[in-house]
Length: 119
Image (cartoon, rainbow, N blue to C red; front, side, top):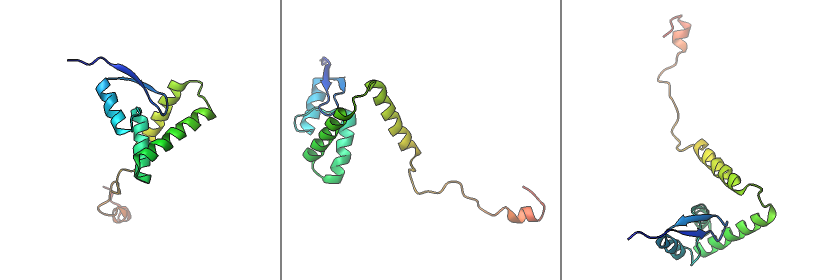
């Protein structure tokens, strides 16, 4: 039996998503009865790593979103959201993934250059 999609509004940022009722209930089960979007869920997870409490992390993120909305309402919210996600993706692609060095030389090219022979 296929479930009818519902529109859910994030209680942090106000973003709306179309999803199934089962998904909405799973998210509410994780976040004390509140429905939050995927972007806010990632922010709450990051905050949980720092402070350890899901409820406190969620409260902090909700306060952050509320304060941000009160400071400067965007003129183009959809475009601003897309630009912010793009910036996050670009930042994550630019950050080093490991401590492995790049290309390594196996030997110096100076002796070949000094003797006049080039590879």
